[in-house]
Image 1 (cartoon, rainbow, N blue to C red):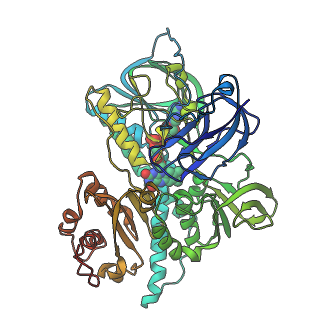
Image 2 (tube, protein in one colour; image 1 turned 120 degrees about the vertical axis):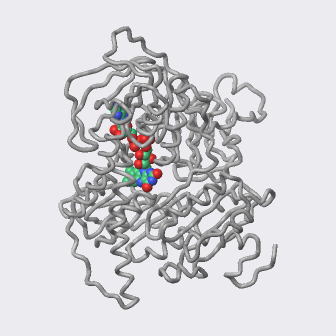
Length: 595
Ligand code: FAD
């Protein structure tokens, strides 16, 4: 028997990549090509396969660790041929970027029955990806149906995600702004919050949009079939019809319909990721529970320091809840540069009693007087801590394994993602997949663009998802927005960049608005001079980042951006000024050396 170290192969130059899943443990027998770990960059997940077979003797990594090419994952005692092979180190196959099909293409099922209806395109899932794809396909003149299990279109984003969270954040932001006015001599009494009315406002916003979508489906003659859809062959979906009083609540009527399709677009999205050790208790909520805004607890633990948890935390904190947050990684809002997050964190210190990073939640117990949570790690308190409410915001899981994809012959990875090519095609060429179900980043704007690409291909065009960048935004207070290469990534990947920062302390508008703690950063490729990334922290950063996205897509350099006349006085001006900083010609800052 020989001992072999299983190492991280070529991962396309990424370094210090997060390990988000470890699939092996000591004593396991692994086969060659079996997934050992899953890595996640901000753009992709990668399953790292074993380069040799054998029995695992040591596992050197755990979830939350960071690893680079050459890092040892595990040590195995090799079996069979590997054991007798000469002791030269085999170069492992490079890890494939995602969403990689961990499982081979399944054998499709046959369906010889008759269909109740036939379409050019059936879209499974009516979220932002699904309805956008369906409407675009209908605009191409195709006969289209959407299969959606709940009674409204719009998916997670519109019903229990982007939109209701922003409706609540808008109210919270206004309250915060008004509180800040006290320092300018304008004093209001503390607000009286009528939760029922606030919920009503949020529901009205959702209702306006979902009604609009239903109308647009009708106007385009897109059939919306309400039910739970499952593939039964590569050209048929069986729909168990449902009734649904509200989003995420559906009961089957017992009636079934079979729809036949020439093309299908899988847009079945994702669901909240449940942690196995968390009990059922009304005081333990997920993002949907948080949006329901049943009450304002005195204190709340947020499990997971990502965007969704921090956005919801902002709402609750403004309404009076004291916050704590626990995050396994080494900082909140992973993905954004630390200098940006630092500005947000300083501005939000007052909301938190404790921020626990590099810390794991290991046990949660529901008792009569509260929820008791035990932690492990760098910032873990020794004793279990008591909370009135716990918000679990530990991520979302794709729905790939819940739609009978195997009956259509569509490959689904172990984690439930569906692999697609640049045309959004799955391994079955007339079946496409889009949105959260195809991989990170799980964002509505990515889903919509992918939906348009899939629809155009269904119509016979040759369309590709070839966006250079996908922006990310935390709609917190202040907002943190970023796009393209971050400074952290550039460092990790050894990229030759130049960066320029325009501090909002030098912006007239930011000073006038009381947000001079903000910052706009641009990142350029040092050789070509083209912009490859950017970030903004400050109010409306999410609205402004679009200009940087466009500049990256257009291949702009600092002169293009700096010589574009931005209106004065605006916060958006800071992008042009940051470009002037890059050129060494910014006259709104102390003199720089001209470049
Ligand atoms: P989904 O929106 O998940 O829609 C999938 C649809 O498919 C669902 O309606 C589901 O009911 C249906 N479905 C699934 N399986 C079946 C089946 N078998 N039969 C019939 N129907 C089925 N993104 C942003 O870009 N910006 C934000 O500000 C933002 N904020 C968010 C805030 C919160 C609290 C959450 C939870 C998410 C947020 N997101 C945000 C993420 C965004 O909501 C998702 O990326 C987006 O909704 C994904 O769209 P999708 O079309 O892929 O899938």
